[in-house]
Image (tube, rainbow, N blue to C red):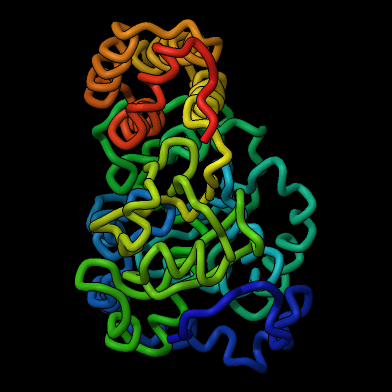
Amino acid sequence: MPEKRIVLKNCGVIDPKNIATYLAADGLKAWQKARQMAPEKVIEEVKAAGLRGRGGAGFPCGLKWELARKSPGDEKYVICNADEGEIGTFKDRYILENDPFTLIEGIAIAAYAVGAKQAFIYLRAEYHHLLDLLTSAVSQSHEQGLEVNIEIREGAGAYVCGEESALMESIEGGRGEARYKPPFPPNRGLWQKPTIINNVETLMNIPRIILNGAGWFSQTGTEKSKGTKVFSVSGDVARPGVYELILGSPLRELVIDLAGAEKVKMVQIGGATGRIVPYTMIDTPLSFETILGAGSIIVYDESRDTIDIVYRTLEFLAEESCGKCSPCREGTEAMAEILARFDRGEGREKDIKVLEELARAMSISALCGLGQAAPTPVTDSLQYFREDYAKRIKQGGKVRC
């Protein structure tokens, strides 16, 4: 298990273009070990490790696999979500650029465990420059005996396709829109067949768990958040980049000690729909039971204006809403319009009440995670920086600290 460290460059052990160096560094040994185990035993090992999805939701990985394994039918699928369209996230890009073979090995183990013969890597449109690298890595891996067929599908730049059901719609050739749930993908997913969807970072942990054992993985982290987490840190920091910390480490260590932030006003964790954390909570542990998202960490210093930040975020979410359900389609637009009034210095006291009512309605009625979590930056900013809204109403202008 790696110690807390800054991940800034390739370690030099693995050549991402040549599988020979990967094989020399124990590459594919986890795959070989998994093939000697019953699929159910592989799943039990992942469950015992306590690995949770690193894409943001934190759903137990082994449980998802088990549900798909037990679902009836011979045709099943594995999808690696490499869409990474979240604001401020670029950790998966770093992983793909530097170690595609571990990812492919993780996909192969997942496919074996659930009984899938076909897998997909859904690649973000903006990562087109990685297509040749991944295609070559898949081809070289197949030459080494990986039995699962892995196909790479490129997205078209839609933020909503990071949501698992919209992603499946895209792979099937449809419009990227969320599906109604249930059924859930492990029961009926891609082409209505049992499907597991894990993001890049989640699958990167699988070979290490199989090779070293569940106990090795679960010895670090917290009771409910095992292992390490990779973070993309950007914003008002001296050293932006990709960092890996043991889960449970304090937010202060990441943004101040490692990334060199000063005069922090707030930190947005998890992207556009992520939580806003004020400086007074800078020692909050980074874990699934506290605050954790897809890996995006955006730091804002005291020169930043709260209303501007939240307004820009809601503009983005309104633009990226797929429009299928009215709570998200109309709710994000209404919130953006109200925040635009605050931004112009025309906000009213009753607007705050409307924002809160919209937030409650959207969180319980929107179809997918985008609409349900879209109000988060609004509600968090109202909770921790309500005085900025009040000053904007009173003064009719922007509040600068």
